[in-house]
Length: 172
Image (cartoon, rainbow, N blue to C red; front, side, top):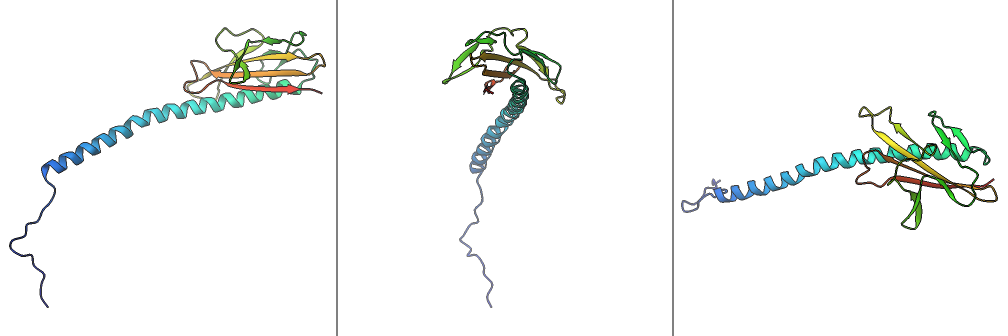
């Protein structure tokens, strides 16, 4: 049995200093790119949490609005907020202004809240005490049917997400 040996003329070759420097630069660029994604991911995760909370809040308010008799013009919601559901005007939105957006009507958050048709809500489960702007508009038809548009957004802005808007029609 013979041992395998290298011939005396062959040289072992490893990484050169230049190759190592190029590899380190590439690794550094890759790590910096990943490090820049972490704060963006955290911010987007927070925005998604706020958006989910706004959606649940809007659904809760909408459910309370559509459960009352159509002739009811005001209620006190489950959180103790006084909510006006209309003033008897027919075929016109009352409450917060409504604007068209992508082929549908949504609450306009550009102006101030309309008393009786809005409130500010604080998330009791959030240690940061995030607050939400809740607004709605009501549209009553001559046949007694009523349409509600409820909009909710985080105070301080929803970036990168738009406010949540729900639209529902009730006819009995």
